Length: 366
Image (tube, rainbow, N blue to C red; front, side, top):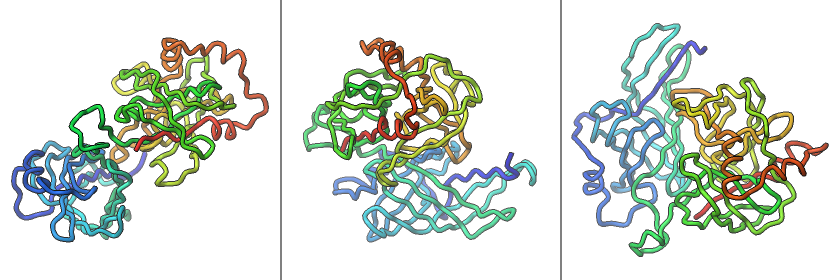
């Protein structure tokens, strides 16, 4: 266990605060003008809701609702300068820092300015960091964060019809048959309005949405390709301490177009709130891993589908996958006969990394 547990939440950095609602922020800072992609209402992975707006040549960040439940609405937390179309930097905020273990259980309030920067990964997603010159117990105070935009949503046209609007998205998917059937998370394709694509053999291929399960968070796509490799579904139930490998595209193509692997174990046979359709793993998963395969390290058979993880600001290596048994039931319900695949398919002497490289694809809509 680490001697130091540090939870940093962006909170106070102005002398005068005022109550601010989301509608109030829109009316005050974002109304009746063309917005820069950075501007809008955002939410951190911690749960804090905030507004980013442009004033002159600078961008400002004000809290709308704090993740702690305290009343810091309306307080300025950061000021940014545009470095490029995607990179922004500036002065950070004050903190609440919690220290436990070696220093004892206590809450220490520190007002700390920091060097802050973030990258606008897409219209709806950013990742950033805020690191100060202050040190506690020999360790620099700071953190990394992610945020998602919740207003405004991007539209494909100026039409008010919801049929013609969608939210850009990206994630990971994998072939489950040799006929172009692809599995991913429903939340990856939810806003795509059946305009999803996959990247297969360096080509963008349209992928039709055949079926979905909102409760399980699964989606079945069909691409017009003849793929040789696919992931076989395990007939065995997962076990604690089972060694696994997760494959995917964390942070999408912005990080790189190379498939990434992480390894770990099955930590628990239940998900959050005792969800028996999921497992908990300690292999690293990040934004963009969603929908990717989690396979047995020895056999290469599907153990689960990557789906979610707890905030990296308060936890380490607590991530979740949808059990292969649930995936099989989903496919069986949609007339995809996985039993025949299990009989006719074997890995033989093929390298596991080669199987994953060929069976795992990047999926997106824009």
